[in-house]
Picture 1 (cartoon, rainbow, N blue to C red):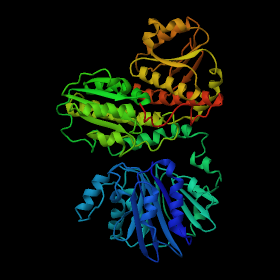
Picture 2 (cartoon, rainbow, N blue to C red):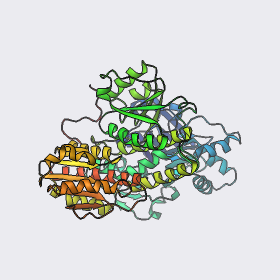
Picture 3 (tube, rainbow, N blue to C red):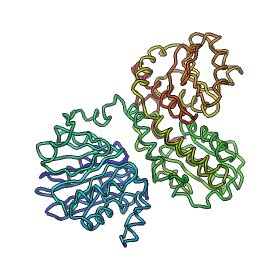
Length: 595
């Protein structure tokens, strides 16, 4: 989740931009840069790693008098985290920064290269500034050229562009990625969140999707829906939410779109990171992970076998390397980790490398240890996750694994073009299903007060909803400290049902599109033994004490992603009622780097 800052005015611009970027460090980044346009001269500085490296790169630069400036922290998506891929990207007389993903950048880039435009980076962002300057050749009106550029883009973006052709202001555009404009006594400010504006701006405008324009010192009053800026910095970082975990649950549908962008078109799923022949000799898969990542892996195993028709084994990393596992030469070893530093998973990967197997990492952090060790990597693009209990990392891991199953199915021709098209449409609807509905959250908040006591929770589901039940139980354990277990609902009769009584809470995952009647029978068995039943379904259930109603969906994967959100919110609200620190639960760490 990259960060954006911008400024129009007379203050010293380098230090102001660096301060703003430091306020956005919580979003995560692997490179940074800034550009200052002053006295019609454009100055650009970029560096990899932390902001101290950017500070060193521009230590001798001072900006005085009126000017415009933009700054950026980048989380790598297209292209490695190198200085040449860092923002801002510059053409002949203009410079741009961008959050999000340009889906059709390859097509735009090829068209520009056909016109002899030379590109320096591997990024999708660089096409914006070159396209703008090409459009300027056809019109002398800079705003018209900028609007034409933006209308050519497909995807999600927050964009700031400065140019020597219009040195008194900044061009901006917003679609699916946050962008705020603020006004203070010393000028106009831009940012991707409130935090960098506190202490500088007094009033702000939160741009809506589709906003395109040119801002100078006299234009702020023309914006609609101007608000007074809240001066609480932590509140600003949380974007108004009570906890980072809550914020991260709410932004899942946005990051899922970023996970997918640039990896799917009308014909197929594709991954630039994977060579065409990577899966040629692969006949089976082992996925190795820990905790939440293990639950994503276990869920994905159903999709690999169902869609790609490829044998899939799932292993807990902390156990895998001690069982002296037998592997085959035609086996792909996939590791899944949010941080890329999970010690158990990393050691399993190192072990398998000595046996000569192909390896693939699914990770959220580029240049992490697991990414460096694996043969190839698919980044989840979740952005930094501050809540210790993983939410959007799980969601994006699931999306990457689902896309990978479809990708392998395409390569091995185990799925028809028509079925593939349907699956891609379901993916897009699943993203929409991950959007939090205010009425659903309020229902869960009110319901949570009934689930604070008792001797434990059963989370039950069948098929792919069994690992989701495991994840729901883990979320509740992590932040509420209540005992919870996930079970396959069909396995309740083989022992666990002995615990059933009125003080046992059962959270039943009941998708209408997958084995509903089977799960219903299992729930009725528990209800007959007086267990308290909370059903999650789009269908009413007579024996349920409580029910959280889902939207009606046409596929079980849409239900999967909506249920995922419901389970996360349930854990959140129970934990809040118990007075726990949701973001920093006891005994846990975000990145487990010890065995």
